[in-house]
Image (tube, one colour):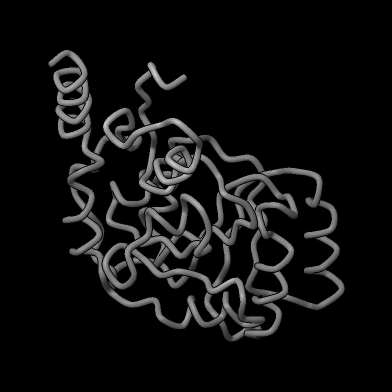
Length: 217
């Protein structure tokens, strides 16, 4: 394996590979996923007063913690739109009903093109994952429409998010970490759009060709 070159999605992945015996830094490169940028971005003030979760309804994704946090914030908190299905779907519905929660909406399985439109019209995408993740495409798709991401300060998600620049990190050590991260949400649409540059398809292509040139030289 010490004769192979590797392409990672994040610096976090690179550090993990470098922890393996025998691998050297010059063998490992970083190239993130990419998404096509929106033609125009909806200003923060014109967006709906809601946050959006997109993904599997699973404990590893932190969906139970997200619902519990929204319950604590009360029905006066912004709406939480939940897109996806999974093993905790019935639990989610029962939690909403038994706690009389009026500001969580279950949208079920939503087509990808429609999901991107919903993300673009939301204040932030929220991803309270409890594990490392790969490189969730929902994150880069959110950046492509100027939407900040609130995500766990863990693994790749924590590595992708830059505090107050393209989103906010959830402190998993804090019982109210989700509520604290949500409370930080403000208008950073312009900085999210600016930082999207490295996730643009043309920039991504140049990164890949640069890696090939380095390996060939």
